[in-house]
Amino acid sequence: MFASARLLIKKLLFKAVGFLSTRPRLKSWAVIVADGLGIAARLRQIHQGMAFPQAGAEIRYEPAKLSQLTPRARQIYSELKSAIKRQKKEDG
Image 1 (cartoon, helix red, strand yellow):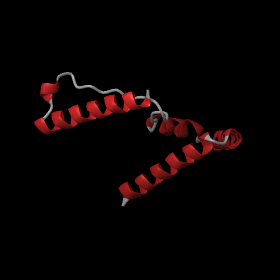
Image 2: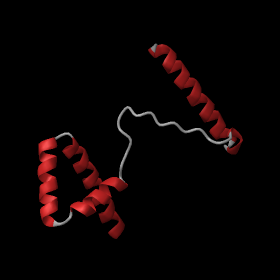
Image 3: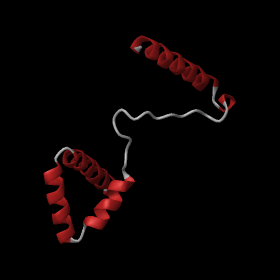
Image 4: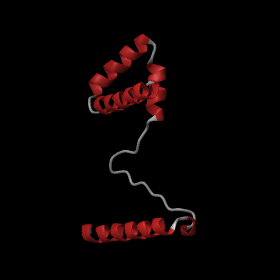
């Protein structure tokens, strides 16, 4: 039960951060209130712990050696690389 409550709180905080990031005035007001309640430092720690890449940011991952992958993973990897190349050619 504790884990499900924790997960619910995490989801709510994640949505709140997304909501506040699009509303700077509300965000600054929320920071002032959090400072007044003495929870600002803890909220910053939580926010830093759930940092996520910005939309449109390119994430690159390539295994050290393709031989480290399973045969199915190698097949999926090569299909993805081909699809990315095709998409880049279509986009210009």
